[in-house]
Amino acid sequence: MFNTLRKQLTLLYTITTGIILTVVIGTIFISFQREAAANNLETFQNNLYAIETKLQTDSLIKYVWLAEYENNNNLLIHIEDNGKPIDYEGYGYQSGLRNDLVELVKERAMEDGINSSMPPITSNKVMSDIYKIKWNNKNYLGAVDLIKEKKGYRSVILLQYFPMEFSRIRSRMVIFIMYGLGVVALYVVSWKFVGKSLKPVEENRKRQTEFIAAASHELKAPLAVLQTSASALKYGDNQAIFIKNIENECVRMSNLIEDMLLLASTDAKNWSLHQCIIDADTLVLETYERMEALCREQGYRLVVDLPTKPLPKMEGDKERLTQVLSILINNSLAYANAKERKEIRLRAYEKRNYIYIQVIDYGIGIKEEIKANIFERFYRGDEARNEKSHFGLGLSIAKEIIELHGGIIKCEDTEENGSTFTIKLKRFI
Ligand code: ADP
Image 1 (cartoon, protein in one colour):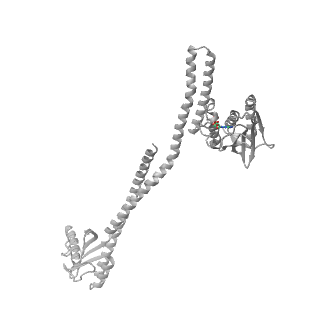
Image 2 (spheres, helix red, strand yellow):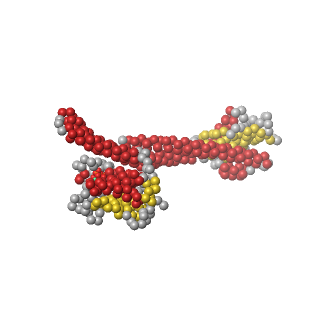
Image 3 (tube, protein in one colour):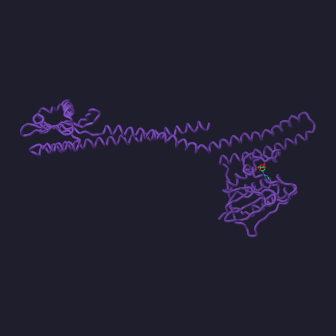
């Protein structure tokens, strides 16, 4: 599913970006072509004008000038006096090719009604259109120019070779190769990019699936008890026991569902904190008041350890932070070691702009190898597996709440035996 989606998105990215690139490159290419064509036309016109002027100003046609001009500008200049070619042989074109090209331009002009072997009738000067001539895969521009003179007329047939076609083929090939490489590079980059962006989505989906599987598994047990107790109620004696069982399971299920809803809403990011400015000392003392009786009931002393100087204020949701401390104290009671100190310490102190709140116990402690897992949802240590009231959600809820506060929660060993959970929160400045 991940790979299919990744492939589809990669293709989508590549195709869309490819189309955009093609349009952009195509537009640039076309505008370059147009610009080049316009430039060529202008150059041709200038050359024709320069030759015309030269012929008009000089009484004698200088062949050396013509040869040089032809050579420097890729030109073919063919001049006829009263329909007869002058005996200039031209420069750089074999005479066969030269004649062919001249004939081609003459033919094109003739099609437009301009005969280079006839004097201009209506005016002193007649010029044909500028024709695009293709000959042996080469591109030329050509035109016929007829000028009336004292003793008749003179025809100038001008062709100019633009070495465009070859370079165009070559540049087209380069463009195609570059384009192909670009599309491949685009695919690779998109593949990496899509993979990276889908990773958190995939992880989230995996987490959700695991969460649903674990939650359904946890809900099955109390439901089974409810079912058997209900049917036992119909037939059996000892109804009070079954009613008690049903009550207990209902409490268990409602606790579990409450925890699951809380985690689901943090996942959906629609769980908001009721932030206010709170006293760390008050938070600790109120937690003490809430939990002391329970600890005492179980034979434990809850000890508060606060610095003599009042702690700075901090921003947070008091109700939720007390819930975290209650989870930690409940765990300390649940994972106690009967042989050790019957004490749980609730300690708070300030260090470098941070407030640290610790729940220190002297219980069974947490093995190094499971320390990394205890904050995962539905994770339970061996000792908790058979405990009906432990679903393995307490620490994951605590972690979510602390992280929503921008804080950190971590677990270490208590110096003697047991575990120390430390919450680190930023002080309010
Ligand atoms: P639960 O307590 O419901 O199993 P938690 O998420 O609160 O779930 O804790 C996860 C696991 O971490 C527990 O199953 C237990 O193995 C371990 N644990 C948590 N707190 C303590 C503690 N104070 N001492 C020893 N083990 C603990």
